[in-house]
Image 1 (cartoon, rainbow, N blue to C red):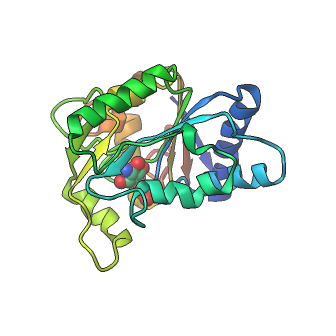
Image 2: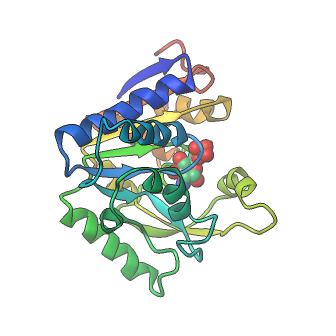
Image 3: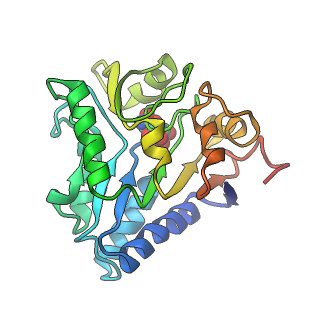
Length: 244
Ligand code: GLP
């Protein structure tokens, strides 16, 4: 893992965004894995501005998102699909036919997860996966547990995640379940960029970088991957300043 501490969120967004743009320029049919949450917003905004400036096209890239809430349709304002549509897809030339998402309203979740894993495999696997991290060390929606997960699956969200994400669900209960790529699916990405911003991520970053590899801190598995870049702001790096 290569860890870099940046002095501003903008610098992280530009650096990570430029990696995705560079991929699209060199390999127009690149396969991108995207994340939701507040952390990657600057990256998407950078990619959109590069597209508007005519410096990159995403017309042929394929995209796969990490996760989706169970029970929310694509046009639900709280769905991760709607988030991506608003913040990236509608702002660029990414083609609807190239966008892949887990369907949180599928009748058979197990079949839906197998379909999604097969689509990732058919696309040749993920060239690059963008990740945030939960305060409890989750990546995607792989919550702390007793073992590392493999392919996509239905997960019961932890109380920590519900507490962290319920702010987005004004006036309604947030779903308690989600579909998510598994740790195995994420791990097979050829390159991974994980971003962490803010003091509330400091403990998870500390466990990921310094702790032992354990499913109790799911992101700790990334230590075994040979192409991971971790981008931190000063606050997220506050407990690891002696080693990075
Ligand atoms: C969400 C997502 C993750 C994301 C994390 C952190 O629940 N499933 O992919 O990385 O929580 O979100 P934020 O960036 O808003 O802190």
